Length: 201
Image (cartoon, rainbow, N blue to C red; front, side, top):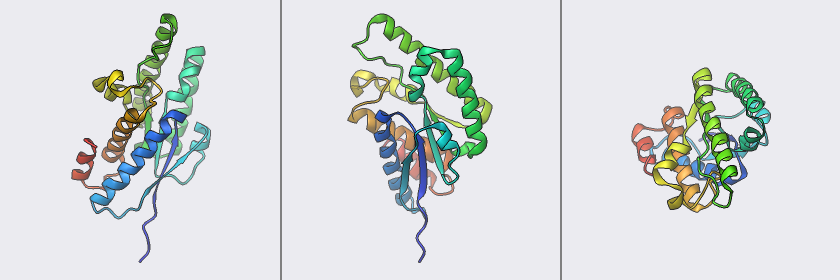
């Protein structure tokens, strides 16, 4: 009997978000198996740039984070906005927009920043998160709103900030990412009950 090929998940995320993507892949694998779907493990491959992701011909699901763009947004927002709109549009044209997911950034600044730095960081993050909405409307790609999901739990409970460091943040983000992918992009491989069950994972 021929084994079913693995689902290939390519991701361009910040280093501190990589464990959350790996956690999401584990949850997706478990949900697919529980649903009896004919799929083997979800395999993650991290890429170093949006360009590398765009040029990747063989991928089933693509996850992109806005977190690597925070510094650019702080330095020169107009330039960052124009560049990202262009790059995300190109990415959506190259890949299947229904299987392309853009993660927002949690709007919580580190406590060791001074007030001016905290305000500047929060403004940059708000701009990036709003950009995700505009890009989604323009291209049809999916938005994984980590900011909204984390706001319900709170930074203190998760012991994290916008970088999503820490075990609690990793598990919470992994659950949100997995649920979003199941609901929006893997209907042909997983049943509705399995997708619903992952929401509480």
